[in-house]
Length: 363
Ligand SMILES: Nc1ncnc2c1ncn2[C@@H]1O[C@H](COP(=O)(O)OP(=O)(O)O)[C@@H](O)[C@H]1O
Ligand SMILES: [Mg+2]
Image (cartoon, rainbow, N blue to C red; front, side):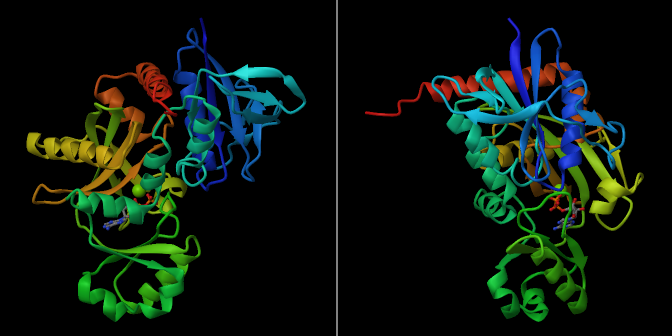
């Protein structure tokens, strides 16, 4: 019997377009004899709509111009027992029952536990981290406090709320942190609102910039190391892939380098590391994944310093899944094709759901 697979893409975050590209790739790479795809697109203003996967995307080849076509209808998620379903607004009698949903949404509103909470309440199995893993993975302040507690190397940082902005001066910061500093909003992605600074005037400008995107920001000490990424897959017994490297053209991996400049950064997949370095990177990725309560998949980004230490920069619980993205490429280089990877992610989602369904909810 065909598995009814929902794919949710788009969304309200600045990574809307990347999410559409990720969805196209997942639709293409998934086994057509196994899955019947039900495509849900979320518009930039947050409207959930049903699309025909064959005609859903306009300018599908252009990351800057890609957008969603006309939808079939608006849809509503209906929680039910034992399984939730979707209905079309114009025809509420017809139930769209899904076996699993792959929410390939990046950034706030998709990767932060909010969609995960909705699907959990609705009783629909979904790919990736649950509410807790998604939420702590999105908030860089909470993420880093948990990593620090687990004694995983991270850049020393100060976290500050908007209400305390005027109380913190550059001269205070450099008493505890060495320059260069990275100033970043706690909850964005894609390098949005992030600056690298070395002096007071840059610092003041960077604080203003970061506070435009969040009410909480991080001031981090810069780590001088190679930017190494490792893919993780699994629930209770996750495994780590080979490593990849990002080599930005400029002084850091900025928004410009990620999305605007065609040769803003070079991705080396896989990257040659010594056996010892690869072991450190993989062990750090797995420890990070488990410390942050992740499930399904995540990409762990690190700085590998010349002394062989892996400093964790961040985790991405729904990493880019486009045809050129690091996550699926790292698994291809580790011997898992994209078809197999999607099968595995769906199995992990369904297994987790079965496990949770068996938990006693009353005494
Ligand atoms: N502490 C740091 N030391 C050195 N480089 C950093 C540091 N923090 C961020 N960067 C640079 O900025 C980029 C984006 O920062 P990151 O924290 O990964 O934010 P995002 O979630 O937006 O990707 C990184 O890929 C890296 O190039
Ligand atoms: Mg990053």
